[in-house]
Length: 394
Ligand code: PHE
Image 1 (cartoon, rainbow, N blue to C red):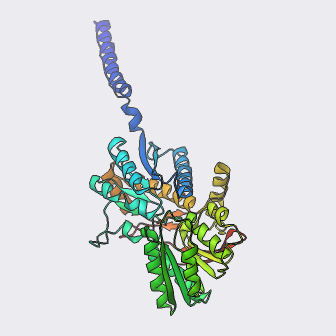
Image 2 (image 1 turned 120 degrees about the vertical axis):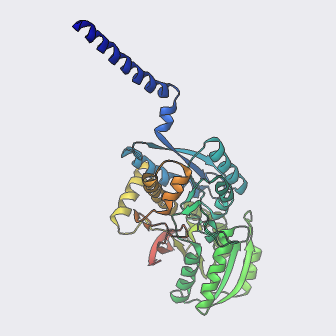
């Protein structure tokens, strides 16, 4: 009797154990458990094409941050997994990459793109599918606010400052420190970034008492700028503002110097690439100033530590894109930690509430317009090297 009772107990417990065990195995064998253990992060970046150095740097910085976050245990036990595609620095590609990430890979968030134009090319797709987009670098104001309605785009966020700040900061620096009065502008009129910055610079420069003596255009595939530079030269400016990307900027500055145009050039974050020095040469870059997001030379332990780790992993000094990519990894981690669940909707809600993430490009809080209010640096090219000139408060 006693023995029989014991056997029944043994059998019941064995059965119970088997039940639990097989159900656990059930999830494992379908492979579900694995996908439950990771959070997929969609990446849509310019890894080839005419701004390839931007995408590569941003990806390096972002990957470094995610590796650190995973090494420290991930997000509530889940590891972050990057699913990345190259948008080839092209609007149409950027849109199809977004569609692929959303419909095939079913990512709950997309990181990218670098440029304002490539980001704008897919934000409608993301909004329609209610999947949040987080860009580290796209600075045109229309990226997060729809200019037609004036409404904030519910699913689009960024971790950088915006172009009204960048454009007017250069206007003020040119007026007050370089003491110039007659500016010429040369912009890429196919790029919303370039067009926007030209406008913000013009407003700031005029407000400071300066005159814009030329406002000239080029398009993204142009290589020869001699005729437009001849026209600009004839108008006798004492400053030339070129809010554009390094491939064209390099040619413009090089050709201008060859033509004897020796006035100061002003530029923007789009100049930030090691390729610029290769294309223009360091002598041509003398007397050139840009606005940017960060300087690796800043005397801040956080910056020093980042530069050291980045150099160890990739072998070069991180540019602003790498720094922004890195900071954005931590902004994403902060949002994922606070998200009620790992769904596009909950991640979007958590992104709205990101506060005081200490980054290498400054302290990041997402404001009502889904932007980050941060200071900028003005850098001067000295011997081909971006050299810190001053910090401008937000
Ligand atoms: N701000 C640029 C844009 O909106 C991208 C960029 C950011 C380029 C930082 C270089 C450095 O297109």
